[in-house]
Image (cartoon, rainbow, N blue to C red):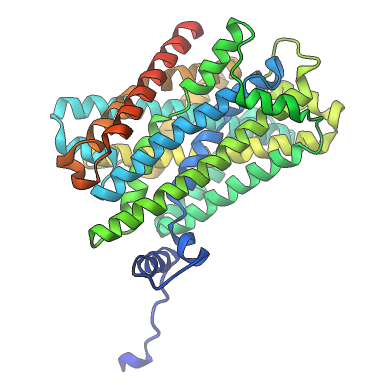
Length: 429
């Protein structure tokens, strides 16, 4: 058969995106069309900052203390930007994930220990995210929590299968979920009363009313930098396109930093809107609890079914998308630390086990969510310290290693996060 008669295979979304990135790096693509192909890794990772664990903490902050803890959300977001930018930098420069860099540079016993910590963090992350999605689906569809878990598992599994078609389809799918979360919470602002003066003051002026406010602020800031997000961001950034020159690397780092700022600014805005919504809806008649189910049942008579439906839609989208991202991170952690990975369906089943156990034993869901954040607090120093060490080392990064000022800033921020996590762990037991 003549080769000319054989239809040519159309390039995939991922292949087209990679080609567009190359055009932008070569100066053949300009304007917004130049920036869009580079959007993806930070967008995916930003879901970790809008997960059900964040929702529970933000509900407690707004319901209990109004707008006065908005400054903690702002500070947490700035710290997240710093560390996610460093993670992306490591991936762009080395072409490897943080886990792969550790595996190639550290003794085997240390690598195995880091893998165990990473796996525990991934399972703790999935506990909060999977339960959050299941609760949202169960309340929205008026079914049992078990049915909500089954539905959430089916949807997350379907999204994970998209990963086999390359990086772009899943990035677009996660981006759609981020859009749903952001729009749902922004729409909530039309239903709740707002006081712009106190909102601005609460954002810019740190204030702690009592020791419990301190605990919530610590929870907001201390559990901000997520272990799986640091591992995943470096891997996603390193696998999309390989720089062919130092000029390519500089451009990729510049585009990456812009994406981190934009994506996490959106995530930070969503978190601040959560606090504002909780303040406007629950603060006046706060009775000492701000659980997810309570929020739903309280919103319905006060602001109507539309407001309650938007809240549950955002919760469900948050749980599903963040659970997908958590599973992706777990798969990458095993692959890059150990050199092999279990089938995706097996990982999905394993990470669901803690959630099923919690529901089967009748454990308080909100308490389980809080304890999952405590586990993450114990795990986060491992990737944070490794990231700072390798990103600031010339042998790993060459001339693109972190500047001394940035390294010092990262060390101070890491020390603050570790200290705050220590307070969170002590107070939670």
